[in-house]
Image 1 (tube, rainbow, N blue to C red):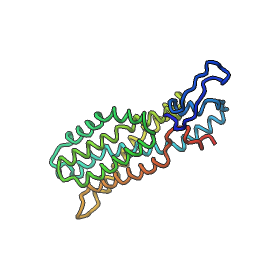
Image 2 (cartoon, rainbow, N blue to C red; image 1 turned 30 degrees about the vertical axis):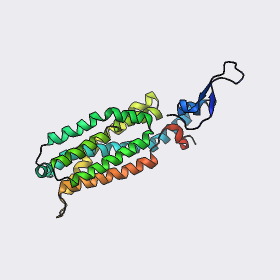
Image 3 (tube, rainbow, N blue to C red; image 1 turned 180 degrees about the vertical axis):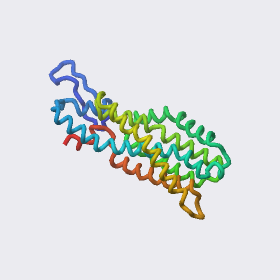
Image 4 (tube, one colour; image 1 turned 45 degrees about the vertical axis):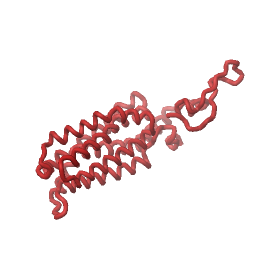
Amino acid sequence: MASTNDEKISTEEKSNPHLIEVSANQVDTGVVLVIGKTGHLSRSETTRLRRKIDRHIIPLMCLLYAIQYMDKATLGNAAVLGLLEDAHLSADQLGTIFYLGYLVFEFPQNLCLQRLPVGKWLSFNILVWAIALCMHAACKNVVGLFVVRMILGMAEGCITTGFMIVTSMFYTRTEQTLRVGYWFLMDGSAQIISGFISFGTLHMKTNSLTAWQWLMIILGALTMVTSVLFWFLFPTCPVRKMYFFQ
């Protein structure tokens, strides 16, 4: 990510007759931080830093990965709660349109993750799919469901890639495998939690909304809260969360 300040960074000492100057706008933020500020951490300092990063990042990543899996699983749960009968369609149709949106927008999503702040871009996409999930409850026909499922797939396409980028930014190669395992572990946990939420909505007796509509609204609201947490708490890159190093 390019630095916004316009200072010139010299690649050699000024006494060098072959001095080359590079604009800070053309280099990675890490280069700006590292030049003239290199050093070594002791083993105890490294351990404390890693634990501090774990406490800040891993809970948010686990939360979002659980929410993402629950949102993906809403189709199967909603089908049991009456969605397919109300919309007169099959589960294969809705599943296909979701993954079509996921695949088509995978490349644009990856491009944006490289050009934009990762944390903010993830937060924006979480908000988009939260709104799309809530909008499921307002759909009255197949066309409406197809549109919101497409948007859902489009927005969720950045999560796994974004998490891989964040993991590689904050952890060494030997530390990454365990951290990836932490947030992948949430798939199974989310399935259990989603089942309990679906069971609860099945017993909600209202005249205005059906059980599957309540399921979409509840999970959409949880996802929206997660997007707010990510916007304010999730780091964009290591050099912009300097309290890690305090």
